[in-house]
Amino acid sequence: MMPKRKGKNQANRGRSWETRLDRVHKLYDMAGLAYIARLHPPYLMRKSLGRGAFEGILLGQGPPDYLICSSGYTLLVDAKEHKTNRLPFAKVPEHQGKAFDLISERGGKKMTGLLLVNFAKVNTAVALDWKDVREAYYFWCRERVMGNRSKSGAASLSFEEAHERSLWVGDSLLGSCDYLPSVLLALRLREDQEE
Image (cartoon, rainbow, N blue to C red; front, side, top):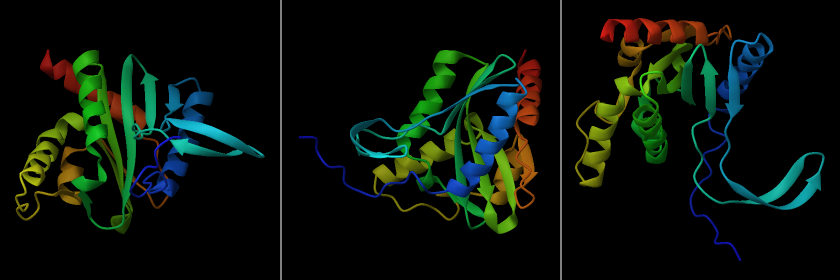
């Protein structure tokens, strides 16, 4: 018998944002601009309920949402949606942060983690390279593990900070999620500057 998982399932948070991204990803795929794989948590299917539904057991933690290959780059992407003008670091599970680190460490310059964050309060979405937020994220993780209370603003990323660090900014109210060309261009320019 498989052990039961304790805690809440986080899989459906931000689902409307992911649904919009799924539509854009389908267009990218149809146009031949990218290979995009939707990633899911590992599970064991117990029985079919018909019409594509099933009952199953979650076997582990969920990876980031997408793996995208385009123009020589490989991106491990997670979509986050938040209703305020701050993204709490607690919304990025530590295992996802580690996955972002691994793709960068093992894949080189053309592989990175990407957070696509929809700040619903201001109807704006941003694309953040994990390398630009990882230091602040891990500082918060260390402080939390040590039992220290976070200083004001250290447990989250403000909309203003995210906007400043972003590779792409879009109006999420109008449904404009065409982020990939801008992200790829920004990564290419950053790579050229480093050489």
